[in-house]
Image (cartoon, rainbow, N blue to C red; front, side):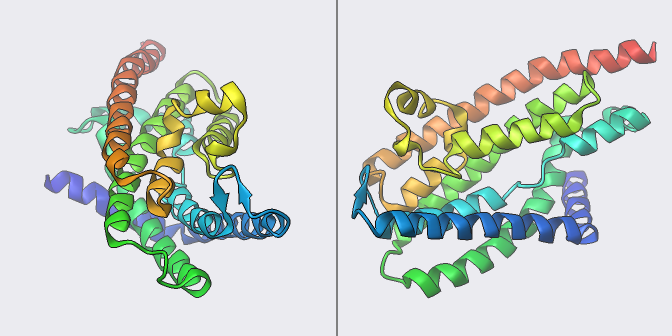
Amino acid sequence: MKKYIAVVRCGFLDGCAYRGNFITGMLANFIQTAVLFFVWKSIFAYQEVVNGYTWELMRQYVFASFLCSSVFSMGFEMDTAQRIIKGDIVMDLLKPMPYRGMLFFRMLGTAGMEFTAGLVLVGAVYLAVNGLAYISLVRSLLFFVSLLLGMGIKFCIQYLFSLLCFYTDNAYGVTKARETLTNFFSGALIPLELFPGVFGKAVQWLPFRGIVSTPCNIFIGAIPLENCLPQMLLQFFWILLLYGLGALLGKKAFGVIAMYGG
């Protein structure tokens, strides 16, 4: 356990050392949230309800989605590609701990800093805009549990995309593809309930939903309390499935490195 605590500490120190990246990333997410806030405000000025969402619910959703998007926002695909090109990835694979576990706990240290800063920022703005009227203690606790599960899903997806860097030097394209898919299909930009027809039903079953949509809808009350546990179990199911897929694809990706070395 001590070695994993040391890795978490290293991840936290990395985040502090490269605080410029952290600050610009947080600022970019905040600007995106501010733009979405005023866009939805303009829409609700002309109609009171949009697919079941009122302006009060949408305001809460926007702030909650900012917190969900800010955690684990710094992907590691670019770093993985650089380590592969330099050959440092071999040392990572030889360390006395699983490669994926090392990545997770290192990112966990950075995520702790992201979560704390995001919670303070979004909490202050949320209270200034909405006050305490819409906050439920039970739903807030369920929200944080669902948020942790969403972090697990997001990490597993990032890990799968990072494995593509073993086959290509274009890590920038891999990172942007993952960011686009995650933001669009997780509900970070638009609530998934607003997607039309069969497409709207299909995205409800994708793992991306568990990153933003599920925690946010639990928080704002769009998901009844009796359905919160099944939704969180679905998040856990996706973690297990993506974890298994990562283990399978990881063996093949690591084999590419061994083949090049031979």
